[in-house]
Image: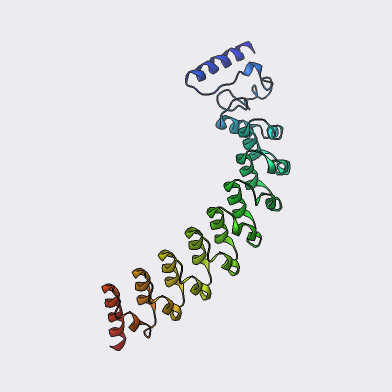
Length: 258
């Protein structure tokens, strides 16, 4: 045993030279069982140092101890322990003061717990909730103050319930909406203030409804209209200020008459 501890101290000294955090194993309660069984190792797998890599490896090797650290004073230990602890032990951590811990819980918690995190003050927690909640239960997050959360909601909300997000103040959210909105409802976004949104409308809307976009201020939108619109709409674009559009319209009309 003396030889074992002698080698241990030599290893600890070498670790200190390369700046890797190393705990003093001679004072650790795990030295007689976990250490000798190679379930922990100074500088590699240790819960006594502030090193996320070492803490994570310690709990991978000692999953049974993870529950004992769920209320540790160091947030990183709690967060990493929460990755390995049985799910049923995580409920109290829904209110943990550290957002990193709550993010882990949001990722692992049973779906029925997630309602308690819908109004969490951390965006990443709410994004995880938006990503995991059943689509039918996402309504509360459709008005989240953060645009990224709302964007996740727009990706997953049932298509028939996207109407409440048609006029979201953020362009990224509306891009998600216009990509999924039922074709018959796309006309409601034909006057969106962002050209890139209207371009998607022009690409997806039914051909007869393209008449809504023949006077669009964006030439790309009008070009898409010229490509897709029925022939009876094309004369409206024959005097378009964009030469490429006029040429395309002329080609289509001449081709149809030939």
